[in-house]
Image (cartoon, rainbow, N blue to C red; front, top):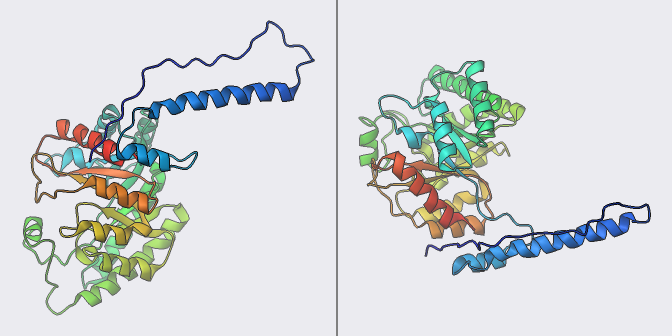
Length: 345
């Protein structure tokens, strides 16, 4: 059930004894003791903000160990503002919108970078810093399910450039996928078939697993050098199932190659499948569908998802990927408010 938090409207004043002069007789021990007492009083007063927390939230607060951070930082994907409309929304505008709406961070969809020169990227980095907004992720696209080695190598090279671009921007993780066979008429047709696709004639998924693993292994040294994690998302193709995704992650077996979980890309039984991914998850997409989904609508139980995050002590970013028909201008702020309430603890 959703919960509400009502903050106590009281003024907290912390007074320390003051004198006009401090003599040499005041010991360092006495000063530290007085300071510690003041800090203790401030802590007790600050704890009063939880006085009006009710329901599950109150239980969660009580269960938190001392010093525990409450809640996950909430980011927004720049895709949420664009959704592949004919004209890409520039990232600088997305930064302004994300900061204005109160997000903690912005995830950049690489296809929205209208420029990639150094000066432009550094201007985005400066803008985000001045807005108090972290740049937490770079979402990229790959196509490794192709028999042509030169074609796959081209996508390897492009992904290496993406890793280096993330490093320039100070972004700690990039989203990757395996791509698809490309045998569907288009993406709409792929979605109509629940993300399931036939292989190219004469080839098998088993061969494609080998191609994808080989490709990611070529990208890994650059990721390690740059200190940028690679997060493989459950984004159709070979990673459409948790078993397929984890087969690739386990084969590569590197702390720099982990999981980027998406709450909306398991179309059946999402909760058990998300649980399978959580031990290796370093980033998460949270889908919302106000006004109905662009391709489908899932009735996701974010209280249940929050429980999964707590179960596995996932403390990383949750990035909103809004995919509804209602205008992002109204739906994105509503999505943020919903995620703050359900994932607050």
